[in-house]
Length: 323
Image (cartoon, rainbow, N blue to C red; front, side, top):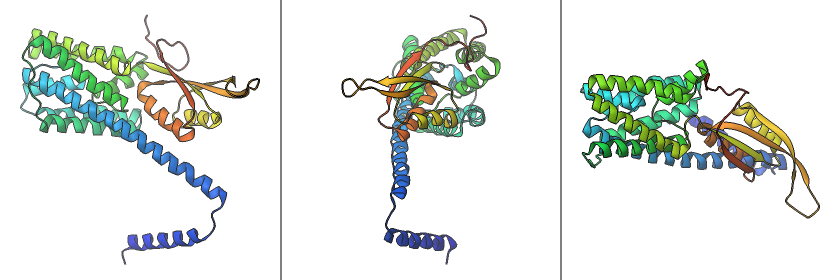
Protein backbone atom coordinates (compact mmCIF):
# COMPACT_ATOMS: atom_id res chain seq x y z
CA UNK A 1 0.00 0.00 0.00
CA UNK A 2 1.15 3.54 -0.74
CA UNK A 3 2.63 4.94 2.52
CA UNK A 4 0.81 8.29 2.04
CA UNK A 5 -2.57 6.50 1.73
CA UNK A 6 -1.71 4.34 4.75
CA UNK A 7 -0.94 7.43 6.81
CA UNK A 8 -4.23 9.03 5.77
CA UNK A 9 -6.17 5.89 6.79
CA UNK A 10 -4.45 5.83 10.18
CA UNK A 11 -5.30 9.51 10.73
CA UNK A 12 -8.96 8.88 9.81
CA UNK A 13 -9.13 5.94 12.23
CA UNK A 14 -7.67 8.06 15.02
CA UNK A 15 -10.21 10.83 14.35
CA UNK A 16 -13.07 8.30 14.55
CA UNK A 17 -11.82 7.02 17.92
CA UNK A 18 -11.49 10.58 19.22
CA UNK A 19 -14.96 11.52 17.98
CA UNK A 20 -16.50 8.78 20.15
CA UNK A 21 -14.93 10.27 23.25
CA UNK A 22 -16.63 13.28 24.91
CA UNK A 23 -14.84 16.53 24.12
CA UNK A 24 -13.52 18.54 27.02
CA UNK A 25 -14.10 22.32 27.20
CA UNK A 26 -10.35 22.85 26.75
CA UNK A 27 -10.42 21.08 23.37
CA UNK A 28 -13.24 23.31 22.12
CA UNK A 29 -11.41 26.44 23.23
CA UNK A 30 -8.33 25.29 21.36
CA UNK A 31 -10.23 24.46 18.15
CA UNK A 32 -12.56 27.47 17.84
CA UNK A 33 -9.86 30.19 17.57
CA UNK A 34 -8.06 28.17 14.85
CA UNK A 35 -11.27 27.94 12.79
CA UNK A 36 -12.00 31.65 13.27
CA UNK A 37 -8.43 32.59 12.35
CA UNK A 38 -8.60 30.59 9.13
CA UNK A 39 -11.88 32.26 8.22
CA UNK A 40 -10.49 35.74 8.92
CA UNK A 41 -7.27 34.99 7.03
CA UNK A 42 -9.22 33.73 4.02
CA UNK A 43 -11.65 36.69 4.05
CA UNK A 44 -8.85 39.26 4.18
CA UNK A 45 -6.82 37.42 1.54
CA UNK A 46 -9.77 37.39 -0.87
CA UNK A 47 -10.34 41.13 -0.37
CA UNK A 48 -6.66 41.92 -0.85
CA UNK A 49 -6.35 39.82 -4.02
CA UNK A 50 -9.43 41.57 -5.43
CA UNK A 51 -7.58 44.87 -4.92
CA UNK A 52 -4.53 43.40 -6.66
CA UNK A 53 -6.62 42.15 -9.61
CA UNK A 54 -8.28 45.57 -10.06
CA UNK A 55 -4.84 47.19 -9.88
CA UNK A 56 -3.36 44.85 -12.49
CA UNK A 57 -6.16 45.42 -15.02
CA UNK A 58 -6.01 49.18 -14.44
CA UNK A 59 -2.23 49.27 -14.93
CA UNK A 60 -2.59 47.08 -18.02
CA UNK A 61 -5.11 49.55 -19.44
CA UNK A 62 -2.77 52.46 -18.79
CA UNK A 63 0.12 50.66 -20.48
CA UNK A 64 -1.59 49.15 -23.54
CA UNK A 65 -4.37 51.70 -24.00
CA UNK A 66 -2.14 54.78 -23.73
CA UNK A 67 1.62 54.47 -23.20
CA UNK A 68 2.82 51.44 -25.15
CA UNK A 69 1.20 52.14 -28.58
CA UNK A 70 2.56 55.70 -28.55
CA UNK A 71 6.12 54.79 -27.41
CA UNK A 72 5.79 56.63 -24.10
CA UNK A 73 7.71 55.70 -20.95
CA UNK A 74 7.11 56.08 -17.23
CA UNK A 75 9.24 56.02 -14.10
CA UNK A 76 10.28 53.04 -11.98
CA UNK A 77 10.69 49.46 -13.12
CA UNK A 78 7.75 49.92 -15.52
CA UNK A 79 9.59 52.84 -17.12
CA UNK A 80 12.76 50.77 -17.47
CA UNK A 81 10.71 47.99 -19.11
CA UNK A 82 9.04 50.45 -21.51
CA UNK A 83 12.42 51.96 -22.37
CA UNK A 84 13.93 48.53 -23.09
CA UNK A 85 10.84 47.59 -25.13
CA UNK A 86 11.47 50.64 -27.32
CA UNK A 87 15.08 49.73 -28.07
CA UNK A 88 14.82 45.90 -28.22
CA UNK A 89 12.52 43.34 -29.79
CA UNK A 90 11.58 41.78 -26.43
CA UNK A 91 7.89 42.00 -25.55
CA UNK A 92 6.85 44.11 -22.55
CA UNK A 93 5.32 41.16 -20.65
CA UNK A 94 8.69 39.41 -20.46
CA UNK A 95 10.55 42.62 -19.62
CA UNK A 96 8.24 43.39 -16.68
CA UNK A 97 9.21 40.08 -15.07
CA UNK A 98 12.93 40.32 -15.90
CA UNK A 99 13.32 43.90 -14.67
CA UNK A 100 11.30 43.37 -11.46
CA UNK A 101 12.86 40.02 -10.53
CA UNK A 102 16.00 41.43 -8.79
CA UNK A 103 13.84 43.85 -6.78
CA UNK A 104 11.52 41.03 -5.71
CA UNK A 105 14.45 38.89 -4.57
CA UNK A 106 15.67 41.87 -2.55
CA UNK A 107 12.18 42.23 -1.04
CA UNK A 108 12.12 38.55 -0.04
CA UNK A 109 15.42 39.01 1.84
CA UNK A 110 14.87 42.42 3.44
CA UNK A 111 11.10 42.74 3.97
CA UNK A 112 9.04 39.55 4.34
CA UNK A 113 8.30 36.47 2.26
CA UNK A 114 4.53 36.97 2.20
CA UNK A 115 4.89 40.46 0.75
CA UNK A 116 7.40 39.23 -1.85
CA UNK A 117 5.16 36.31 -2.89
CA UNK A 118 2.16 38.61 -3.36
CA UNK A 119 4.28 41.00 -5.39
CA UNK A 120 5.56 38.16 -7.58
CA UNK A 121 1.97 37.05 -8.20
CA UNK A 122 0.87 40.64 -8.98
CA UNK A 123 3.74 41.32 -11.40
CA UNK A 124 3.34 37.92 -13.07
CA UNK A 125 -0.38 38.58 -13.47
CA UNK A 126 0.37 42.03 -14.94
CA UNK A 127 2.80 40.47 -17.42
CA UNK A 128 0.08 38.00 -18.53
CA UNK A 129 -2.50 40.78 -18.86
CA UNK A 130 -0.13 42.95 -20.92
CA UNK A 131 0.80 39.97 -23.13
CA UNK A 132 -2.64 38.45 -23.75
CA UNK A 133 -5.35 41.08 -23.13
CA UNK A 134 -6.14 43.40 -26.05
CA UNK A 135 -6.99 46.89 -24.84
CA UNK A 136 -8.33 49.50 -27.29
CA UNK A 137 -6.04 52.40 -28.17
CA UNK A 138 -7.87 55.37 -26.67
CA UNK A 139 -6.16 58.44 -28.14
CA UNK A 140 -3.10 59.72 -29.99
CA UNK A 141 -3.06 63.11 -28.28
CA UNK A 142 0.24 63.28 -26.39
CA UNK A 143 -1.08 65.33 -23.49
CA UNK A 144 -4.03 62.99 -22.91
CA UNK A 145 -1.71 59.98 -23.19
CA UNK A 146 0.64 61.38 -20.54
CA UNK A 147 -2.10 62.41 -18.11
CA UNK A 148 -4.52 59.48 -18.39
CA UNK A 149 -1.85 56.86 -19.02
CA UNK A 150 -0.23 58.00 -15.77
CA UNK A 151 -3.61 58.11 -14.02
CA UNK A 152 -4.55 54.48 -14.82
CA UNK A 153 -1.02 53.25 -14.14
CA UNK A 154 -0.99 55.07 -10.78
CA UNK A 155 -4.43 53.70 -9.96
CA UNK A 156 -3.13 50.20 -10.63
CA UNK A 157 -0.04 50.69 -8.45
CA UNK A 158 -2.16 52.17 -5.64
CA UNK A 159 -4.76 49.38 -5.68
CA UNK A 160 -2.02 46.73 -5.67
CA UNK A 161 -0.46 48.42 -2.66
CA UNK A 162 -3.81 48.40 -0.86
CA UNK A 163 -3.74 44.65 -1.45
CA UNK A 164 -0.36 44.38 0.29
CA UNK A 165 1.88 44.10 -2.79
CA UNK A 166 3.65 46.18 -5.43
CA UNK A 167 3.66 45.95 -9.22
CA UNK A 168 6.73 48.15 -9.55
CA UNK A 169 9.83 46.76 -7.87
CA UNK A 170 11.66 50.07 -7.46
CA UNK A 171 9.54 50.77 -4.37
CA UNK A 172 11.24 47.77 -2.72
CA UNK A 173 14.67 49.13 -3.63
CA UNK A 174 13.64 52.55 -2.32
CA UNK A 175 12.49 51.10 1.02
CA UNK A 176 15.76 49.14 1.34
CA UNK A 177 17.96 52.17 0.56
CA UNK A 178 15.93 54.47 2.84
CA UNK A 179 16.61 52.14 5.77
CA UNK A 180 20.28 51.84 4.89
CA UNK A 181 21.13 55.50 4.23
CA UNK A 182 18.55 57.40 6.35
CA UNK A 183 16.79 59.04 3.41
CA UNK A 184 13.11 58.88 2.55
CA UNK A 185 11.51 56.53 0.06
CA UNK A 186 10.36 59.54 -1.98
CA UNK A 187 13.92 60.87 -2.32
CA UNK A 188 15.20 57.50 -3.54
CA UNK A 189 12.39 57.15 -6.08
CA UNK A 190 13.08 60.67 -7.35
CA UNK A 191 16.78 59.87 -7.93
CA UNK A 192 15.93 56.60 -9.71
CA UNK A 193 13.41 58.30 -11.98
CA UNK A 194 15.75 61.19 -12.85
CA UNK A 195 18.22 58.57 -14.12
CA UNK A 196 15.49 56.80 -16.13
CA UNK A 197 14.22 60.04 -17.69
CA UNK A 198 17.77 61.08 -18.58
CA UNK A 199 18.28 57.82 -20.48
CA UNK A 200 14.86 58.35 -22.10
CA UNK A 201 15.89 61.80 -23.31
CA UNK A 202 19.15 60.41 -24.73
CA UNK A 203 17.75 57.25 -26.37
CA UNK A 204 14.35 58.52 -27.54
CA UNK A 205 13.96 62.31 -27.45
CA UNK A 206 13.80 65.20 -25.01
CA UNK A 207 10.12 65.67 -25.83
CA UNK A 208 9.37 62.05 -24.94
CA UNK A 209 11.28 62.43 -21.66
CA UNK A 210 9.30 65.57 -20.79
CA UNK A 211 6.00 63.78 -21.43
CA UNK A 212 7.33 60.87 -19.37
CA UNK A 213 7.85 63.26 -16.44
CA UNK A 214 4.24 64.38 -16.81
CA UNK A 215 3.13 60.73 -16.87
CA UNK A 216 5.15 60.05 -13.74
CA UNK A 217 3.64 63.05 -11.91
CA UNK A 218 0.10 61.97 -12.85
CA UNK A 219 0.81 58.42 -11.69
CA UNK A 220 2.41 59.64 -8.47
CA UNK A 221 -0.49 61.91 -7.56
CA UNK A 222 -2.95 59.09 -8.25
CA UNK A 223 -1.01 56.73 -5.99
CA UNK A 224 -1.07 59.42 -3.28
CA UNK A 225 -4.84 59.71 -3.68
CA UNK A 226 -5.39 55.94 -3.49
CA UNK A 227 -3.04 55.01 -0.65
CA UNK A 228 -1.72 58.35 0.67
CA UNK A 229 1.77 57.55 -0.55
CA UNK A 230 4.32 54.78 -0.07
CA UNK A 231 6.12 56.61 2.73
CA UNK A 232 3.04 57.80 4.63
CA UNK A 233 2.62 56.42 8.12
CA UNK A 234 -0.65 55.59 9.81
CA UNK A 235 -1.18 56.03 13.55
CA UNK A 236 -3.37 53.23 14.91
CA UNK A 237 -5.12 53.38 18.31
CA UNK A 238 -6.59 50.09 19.50
CA UNK A 239 -9.04 49.75 22.39
CA UNK A 240 -9.80 46.16 23.31
CA UNK A 241 -10.38 43.90 26.29
CA UNK A 242 -7.65 41.66 24.86
CA UNK A 243 -4.99 44.34 24.95
CA UNK A 244 -2.31 42.00 26.32
CA UNK A 245 -2.63 39.61 23.36
CA UNK A 246 -2.67 42.52 20.90
CA UNK A 247 0.48 44.01 22.45
CA UNK A 248 2.32 40.69 22.13
CA UNK A 249 1.14 40.33 18.51
CA UNK A 250 2.37 43.82 17.51
CA UNK A 251 5.76 43.45 19.19
CA UNK A 252 6.58 39.80 18.47
CA UNK A 253 4.70 39.04 15.24
CA UNK A 254 4.75 42.37 13.39
CA UNK A 255 8.06 43.48 14.95
CA UNK A 256 6.71 46.96 15.59
CA UNK A 257 6.93 49.18 18.67
CA UNK A 258 3.82 50.32 20.49
CA UNK A 259 2.87 52.62 23.37
CA UNK A 260 0.49 51.59 26.13
CA UNK A 261 -1.41 54.19 28.13
CA UNK A 262 -4.13 53.81 30.73
CA UNK A 263 -7.73 54.67 29.92
CA UNK A 264 -11.24 54.23 31.24
CA UNK A 265 -14.25 53.04 29.32
CA UNK A 266 -17.13 55.50 29.19
CA UNK A 267 -19.69 53.17 27.64
CA UNK A 268 -22.13 51.33 29.89
CA UNK A 269 -24.26 51.97 32.94
CA UNK A 270 -24.19 55.55 34.21
CA UNK A 271 -21.63 56.08 36.95
CA UNK A 272 -19.53 53.02 36.04
CA UNK A 273 -16.21 53.06 34.24
CA UNK A 274 -13.78 50.28 33.42
CA UNK A 275 -10.02 50.66 33.42
CA UNK A 276 -8.30 49.34 30.31
CA UNK A 277 -4.98 49.68 28.49
CA UNK A 278 -5.03 51.55 25.18
CA UNK A 279 -2.50 50.59 22.49
CA UNK A 280 -0.99 53.08 20.05
CA UNK A 281 1.33 52.07 17.21
CA UNK A 282 2.55 53.54 13.92
CA UNK A 283 2.76 51.42 10.76
CA UNK A 284 3.15 52.04 7.04
CA UNK A 285 0.32 51.66 4.53
CA UNK A 286 1.89 48.43 3.27
CA UNK A 287 1.67 46.94 6.77
CA UNK A 288 -1.89 48.09 7.48
CA UNK A 289 -3.63 45.16 5.75
CA UNK A 290 -1.65 42.63 7.78
CA UNK A 291 -2.26 44.53 11.04
CA UNK A 292 -6.04 44.50 10.45
CA UNK A 293 -5.94 40.75 9.76
CA UNK A 294 -4.00 40.00 12.95
CA UNK A 295 -6.29 42.23 15.07
CA UNK A 296 -9.37 40.44 13.72
CA UNK A 297 -7.84 37.09 14.67
CA UNK A 298 -7.58 38.20 18.30
CA UNK A 299 -10.60 40.48 18.74
CA UNK A 300 -13.05 41.26 15.92
CA UNK A 301 -14.87 43.74 18.20
CA UNK A 302 -11.77 45.84 18.89
CA UNK A 303 -12.31 49.58 18.50
CA UNK A 304 -9.67 50.90 16.07
CA UNK A 305 -8.90 54.53 15.24
CA UNK A 306 -6.62 55.25 12.26
CA UNK A 307 -5.15 58.57 11.21
CA UNK A 308 -2.47 59.73 8.80
CA UNK A 309 0.79 60.78 10.43
CA UNK A 310 2.21 63.73 8.52
CA UNK A 311 5.51 64.06 10.38
CA UNK A 312 7.61 62.09 12.86
CA UNK A 313 10.60 62.85 15.06
CA UNK A 314 12.81 60.58 17.11
CA UNK A 315 12.21 56.94 17.84
CA UNK A 316 13.08 54.31 15.26
CA UNK A 317 11.72 56.21 12.25
CA UNK A 318 14.34 57.50 9.82
CA UNK A 319 13.77 60.96 8.45
CA UNK A 320 15.35 63.23 5.85
CA UNK A 321 18.89 64.25 6.79
CA UNK A 322 18.19 67.82 5.64
CA UNK A 323 14.99 69.85 6.00
